[in-house]
Length: 331
Image (tube, rainbow, N blue to C red; front, side, top):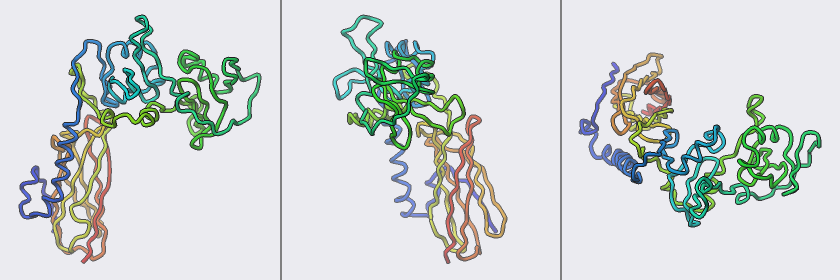
């Protein structure tokens, strides 16, 4: 006989005793700390919240961001709020850029791009392949932009977006790249035609180089009370006991999070246990406000040494995340 019983509260498992309390308490504390780790800022009428990364852009930074028709592509999404950086500047980091606010400049010119390319460039040696018919040389730096990089450069803002080239083609991280004042372009041949040139994510690289506070990367709440849109469901699962008796009890802990590792409540999770004799037991549970679901399992007379695998799929708002976990019947 095999049975599955869903329990909504950990407290109902009193028979587990102190072992369960020691195991579960760190998890509960982690979620409490994580949910509390959110900076508070005043609301702004000129605010846009990006659920993709869990950060707001507002004021002159938002105006500058939205002035580029391909902003999400060339700048990426924000990875911090606006703050005063370690270098003393009011900045905001994006995946592929850093904005700086220059109060000393006239209105409309106060937002400047950090020269991430110049600040992060370390030469690995130039690759010498050019074609005068497919290149454009810039006398200001003495470097050329060629082939697909030149097409991409012209199509996505040119000098205003990328600045002058400050290197030729080089190998970095097993990729052909070229550095510009504000960015780095990469050649990724595994993509389809027309999508093989991409902009490197230098925003986070410079964030780390400056030693900015890692807490600034944590997702925050929308300043304008905008809804947080879940665009990805991530699921993790683990068992209470890695090994069990042939007749025993087991519990599965399921953690459901969004694209920013925030808990997803009320996700519907299907849990399918695969037994050695080919039979399956399944049940449906829903994640709680901390994004956690718990399944209790009782079983009898399972073969010694058998591996019991469990497939888990959690769905929320039409999105599904899957994972597996397992335990072994030892004796």
